[in-house]
Length: 321
Image (cartoon, rainbow, N blue to C red; front, side, top):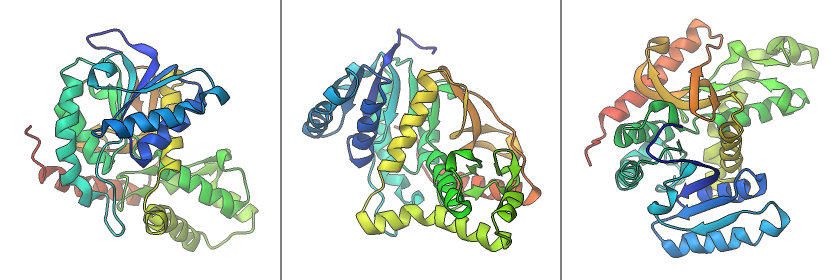
């Protein structure tokens, strides 16, 4: 991990202690990945309260010093996770959040950058693709170590839906949601398989033959699941918390795992200067390389359209601090 100071591989920082930040710290506490987690929030009492509450679970897990702190406490963190931002309201799209949350990032990212933090910067706040782009531009950090949670959660939702549809363990399903984490996301059906068996073949083996109708239904359920959860309970946080834990595992254990993270594109699939999700190899030093998955022409065009949607939003944002 390149940077100006030594990194403590056993330390994480969470910036933002709302539902997502707090649930993520709770998941990380149980994981045993870290021996120290520092919580930062605009409301210090909120950070302190969450740290205290989560700390009371430590005797049932692995030793971990969970405490509230300031930006000075994050300098040596191996991973800095940013969940801070305005929450998505019912009926509000992730992209409609953009102006509010870019404004919040203008106060956060420069504080991280000026301390020369050498760890990984993991962006989770929405709209995650635009905010990942914002974090790269405002931090000046190497793009390899600034990335967003992207469609890791959407992909988990897809695997869950397919697992239920096929009555098979969702962990045996290999499929990705790519593009925007949002309304223009794409299911990469061309590369989807169940333990190496093409998806349609496996569907027929399980008695499902109306492939197009099933694909459309499942894709819509995945895309709209966040809206459904927000309408019913005002926020989503458990699923994303587990996604954050999974990404942190891949980094801290240097797993070289393949995850659909939001990263900067440089001409791949005709897309440039936009952050969106494609499968990448991720390890201790961040993103190593993009993984070229099989896509048909329709899927490539859909990813390009998704990128165009994000580009239009990026072009409407003022990145000057």
